[in-house]
Image (cartoon, rainbow, N blue to C red):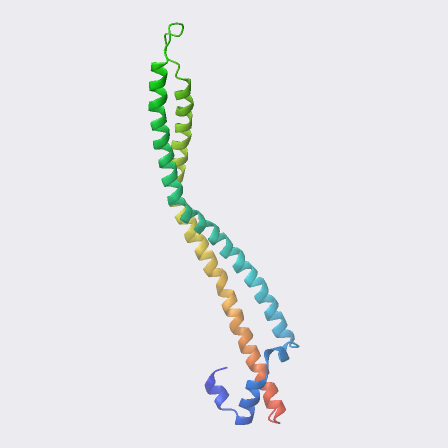
Length: 171
């Protein structure tokens, strides 16, 4: 109901309209059904927003994870230099060839860290796409909520006006 429609009513009806609380209208079956639909729509909206929040969390975490992986790679490369030098220095008479087992372990760690970094970098585009989808899903889930809220408000206004008119002998 618009303000103009309400202003067309007698003053006593308008004043009574304002005094009637929505809790006095809970007995209406149509209003009860609309509220039940709204609860379901809000549950879907919460679920969609939760999915969106998860993706947003990943997107926000990604830059620091990439920086951390890059830092780890540089650290491992530095350790490899030391491990190789140590292996060359530790060469003994009974072991003429250097023992590069420590470097082999670091090399395995380096490959794992590089693979992880590559996965993080590749995920950026996919996460952006997922975020757009999740945002759109959340937006679409919000539309029924808005429509139902509007219908509930309209129904409440109709009921409040009818009750106000009845109380003042206009119905």
